[in-house]
Amino acid sequence: MAENQTLADLLRQKAQSVIDFPTTVVRNLNDPQAFLKSFGYTPSQQLSGFSAGYAGVPEQPPSDIGVLDPKNIQYNKGYGSGEEAGLITAILGGTTGLASLAKKTKGLKNESGKGFFDTGDIRRVGKHQPNINPLQLSPDELRAVQGNIEIPNLRRDISSSFDQIIKNPELNSAFVSAKKINPNFNLEIVKAMPPSSLQKQFPIAKTYEEMVKGIEPTLQAKMFAQYLRMHPEAVKKSGATNYSELIPASYEQLGKENAQQLDRMLNQGMNLSYHKGDLNYTGSPQMLEDALLNKHLYTFGGGQPHELLNKIDPYTGLNQNQVFRAVHDYYGHGPTGASFGPKGEELAFGSHSQLYSPLAKMAAATETRGQNSFVNYSGINAELQKNMMALKVQQERLARAGQDTSAIDAKLAELGSQMQYAEQKAFLLPPEMIDLNYKGGVPDYLKPYLNPNNPSSATGYHFSNSPELTMTDPSRYGTGITGKEANRLKMADALRDRTYFYTNPAMKEPGLGINQYQAELNNLYDINKDPDKLNVLSKIYNQYQGILDKDAYLNALERTSNQAGYKGILTEDKIINFEPQIVKPVKKE
Image 1 (cartoon, rainbow, N blue to C red):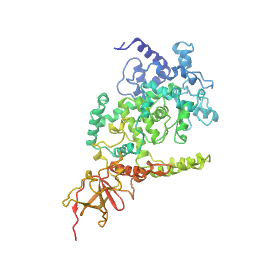
Image 2: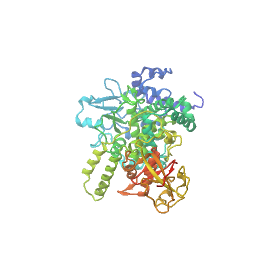
Image 3: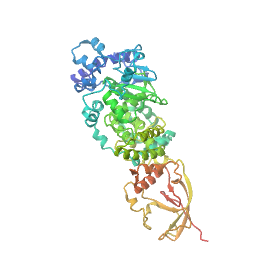
Image 4: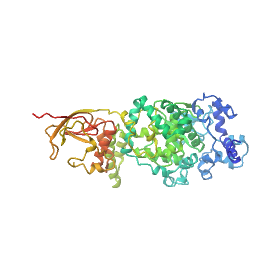
């Protein structure tokens, strides 16, 4: 026995190998290197597909497999369809020997010997699929295989309702499974996260946008130094000596851990149907009901190949990115009941990230929190979001009045289908932004690398009591006359330091200094043109039931403009400048 390994540990490991035997056999038939490893031979690092995920992965005790949880016995019976009850019956029902165990394990027994089959353009993945030729399925049988929730489904757990499952984690199969992956998994950690907001996630969105374009070597060096400070053990174990090496190391580990999570799902009786975009759920409640009651998930199988998550597992026929989508829906949204919206996706990150090692979590954050932030908080979909928000207000009013909302529902679905998504590219966000307790803000070392997309320039005119002013000082805001925005700028999220300029040299408010200066101001954000939709975005996230919180909106607009790399804001008659500015006196005629 290895050092510190007890007899109980050894017995659990051996029991695990028995439980996984049927799946392992099929994998070994498709993967000779995994077969060699089962005899104690460690193959060279030439593994391909998800078999790479099993090299060096510690065994899990049998209590970690969902089908061995006594509470899940009924949940894993053979769906009343003539299927055998599965592994739990083989182990607890008196059968003996590996041969009988393998015989009673249903799995897929198609001619290829793989863990999937295709019906039309849908790929079915799962250990408990029907043992019949899919081409011979009747329409009703085919729908049952799909786990379609519009019809009574044989997989459904009739012992508890969907509402009960969401309210009681102990009845939630995704929560129970997550708890077995990480015994410290805790929904309270998710609830304690700073809530999803524009203030929190716009900086991530802007960073994502910039990093997709490319990352300068100097920034790479600074981020790697931060990762070394904040995650020294993970970086050390990765073997990476720089940022560009840390990226593939993190994604490789993510692929391995996703493969483990998928195996756990399949061992628990989950079935997956990968489609090409025509079987998307109408919303998160439908997905959650399908997953938690039907033990089935529809998952999008299309899209462009991921540059790093692209290896294919011959057993499931899935690439690593397809696997990631399924395990994220199950372990991100399943335990929390989180929606597909911006707030729900952030909660799903908080849930799923608890199941990853620190190294894998780095890449997972880019793929989940990073992409969600870009899609919902960058401004790329701001006009759509504005239109959808107005419709949702109408929808809620009609629903409260008991009136039909179907026309608005259809319009919302149509607009939702027009959403633009993030370009998929492999990189790692700054380590500050992957922390579950991140509240927002841009690290100082990152600020010089966030560049404005559509800067404007203008000549500005400033009045001062100083007769020899050469440079403005934004920190001196408030030492002159008190502006009407003074109370707003006392709010915690306000960007207080600023200098005001007029665009018209003839304009001057009472009480200003007698000395007039002018400056050529660059890198301004023109809120009237609103090229990055920051004005629209700031209004969207600072209104309720169509009522705008004007102070919160203005603070958000100023903050996001500054975090987007702009030095100031240009309005019709004024300029708010956030940085020191060289000025020169206006000559008197």
